[in-house]
Length: 251
Length: 236
Image 1 (cartoon, each protein chain N blue to C red):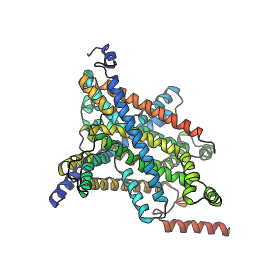
Image 2 (cartoon, rainbow over the protein chains, first blue to last red):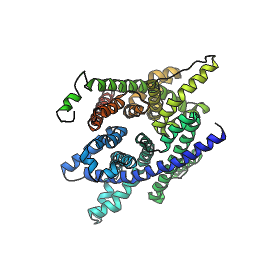
Image 3 (spheres, chains in turn yellow, green):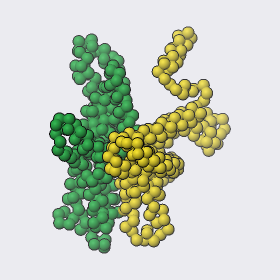
Image 4 (cartoon, rainbow over the protein chains, first blue to last red):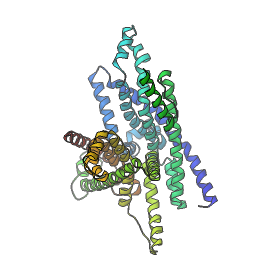
């Protein structure tokens, strides 16, 4: 690959990064909202609501995302009454379609993450809050939720990586994000390996930044006395371990 | 066409009906997922032991491999293989003095893509399973006089599979889902057939809906099967 193509490739990719980031930035909050609704419904008093939410989570986790995107983008457009309705403004736009499909799917996966977080809250903490006279709502807001969020964050950072990777599927419905641009560049320049390495590096960098940001949030939510060193390198981790062993021995 | 009664005609067997092409597409999907997954497990086991082993560079290469393939969208891997394998193979062949044109078909590319991605994920599953085996098992086979390789093969790996089963089930479901992406390189698997059917009949919603149902059933059967397997393997 000569300098000229390299610059061309880099320029094209730099433009596409923003599309990928925009897709992820809209999808993740929307997914959280869907997941919150599903989690709320799954813990509801009403059986019908619980059933609907469970069916949603099961169905959208089982069907491949590409099928969901195609149903929404290609499938729904066959109905004339829908094309006449105001919803069509959203559904005729590939970007909006990709965002809707991805966030509904991410919502189903994130609902499972939230369930795991809530299940990890110790029952004693909730009982203690209730015994102190906190109302159920305040108990949830001040005790259950902070603990659940902290417990769910490692799994959620996994989910973020999955969502970021799934934004690549938007290129199948003509949204030219990183992977779509990479495909065009590969077939144009024939510098397949080079383009792949550059795009892979971009994805890995975004992943790393997001995971690190989430680890910061997790640390911020952890009480000070429970915090672990942020950069748990091998040397330091082992010294911490030794220290605690020695402390235990001296007790 | 167009009236609701014609939906039955759409799925008629033979003639213009779509049931037969759909089943053939499903067959291609399953073949691709099965072969890719099987190759992926073998490769994944190798990668896992490369990470666990003493060899430093081998371990670093294995870590790089898993980080890369788990951090990058599978679609990008598919494009790399689709556009890259022909050139790579011809480059290798030229080294052996062969100057003709080599073309790799979409099915091979699909199998390779599924295998590479499954290998990356399953290697992590295997590594976790290896870590979960009690030290006593390693000491036991050494005490019995087994050499490391024999002990690995007869004592450790069978137990690893049992411990890895839930994770491997997830990897299998991921492999099924990944095959849908192969429709973009025009492999005639289920998604591709469904897309063609939707375009020719003008009923894309029904056909994509059918595809969604088929994948739902596939995943449901798979997770059930892995659950049963897990229970049946709880002998030790």
